[in-house]
Length: 87
Image (cartoon, rainbow, N blue to C red; front, side, top):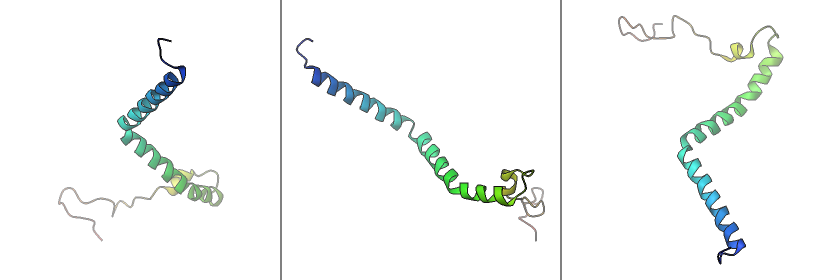
């Protein structure tokens, strides 16, 4: 094959694919980090969801149980006056 050894061609092809893969990962590195963190936090919260599934009746959504409740009196500042949370 034009003076190129078959083993050298396979090594160069492997190197090319590896560099192409690294370049692709480098290009989408922010997305990969966010995706990895999402998987990590999902694994971290999973025992809590399982516990909520055992404690809460089946009619109630597990996500609704785990979502923080919003108290309208303390949730956000008064936009008209600029005051913070009122006691």
